[in-house]
Structure formats: structure tokens, C-alpha cells
Length: 201
Image (tube, rainbow, N blue to C red; front, top):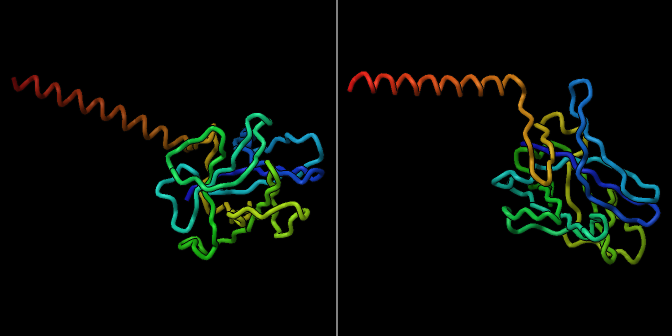
């Protein structure tokens, strides 16, 4: 199973959260994922790991979610909903796959998931690891809670990278070398077959 990192930034002054893509950099031959702050007020940023949203079929018991964005407000997250069309790539939506119920994880049931509770207030959301809403004017989202991985569990899985909502696989260098060798062997074999065919004419 392939996992991808995702950032959730929470404005602790206004009790508002944003789903965001991490920014990738490379340091000492390792991929580093950094979550960039966007709120003006003090904020907390946490990184979680969810299933590659381009994986098909969607794993049993999991759900394709859409963190809906408002492009008129610097891509702030305004709602969480499910995406019923698995092939619809919406630019105003951060897509990800997570579990609705950890009991339905199947072969992955031995790995520890944590719940994220989603609360709505107007055109904003608040995300928390606890089920306590920040104030009475928040309403729990109908899809809350969702279940995701924290960092301590990801060593068992392959980590991919976001790029504009899609996924790029980072192949090890030896895999790329093998692909190039196979490609040239294929071309060489093709020329040999053509030469043999011409000689028989």
C-alpha cells in the first residue's frame, strides 16, 4: 500500500483548519516534506499519512474524500465531503483516501490509526484529534471522524509525493537503469528480427 503525506494547519486563534499539500525538498539524499504556514495568526501544523488518492481499486473499507477549497480565499478549506466519482480530478479539491471505520481495514487492521474529527462553521472547518468541538456554533461534519496514519506507522509502507493533486513515484536509481537496459535490449532484438526477416526474402 502506498501512502502520501498531507498537512493540516490549524489557526488556533480563529479555530479554523486547512488541508494542504506539503512542499518537497531533498537533504542528504533524503526526501524532506515541509508544511508551509499560510494563516496570519499563530497556527499548529501536523503531518498525517493517507492512501494515494489515485490508487484503484480503492481499498476495501476506505473512502475517497475531498477537502473542498475556496479559490477566492487563498485556497482555504471550506468543507469535507466524499468524492463519488473516483476519476474526477477537481482542482478545487484536495483528494485523499482514508478509512471511515478502522475495523474495516482488512489486512492492515494491525496498524494503528488515529481519528480526525471534522467540525463545520459557515465556510470553514476545524480538525482535531479529539471529539471536543471548539465552541457551540460548530457542527460535526457528517463524515467525521476519518482515520489516518501518524508518522510512527509509515515505515511499513511506500511513501509517494504529491504534485498538483496527482502522485509521482520516486523510483530507486537502479530501477531506472534496469528500465533503460531493457528498453535498449528490446530495440536491439527488434533490429535482429528485422534483419533476419530481410535475409530470408
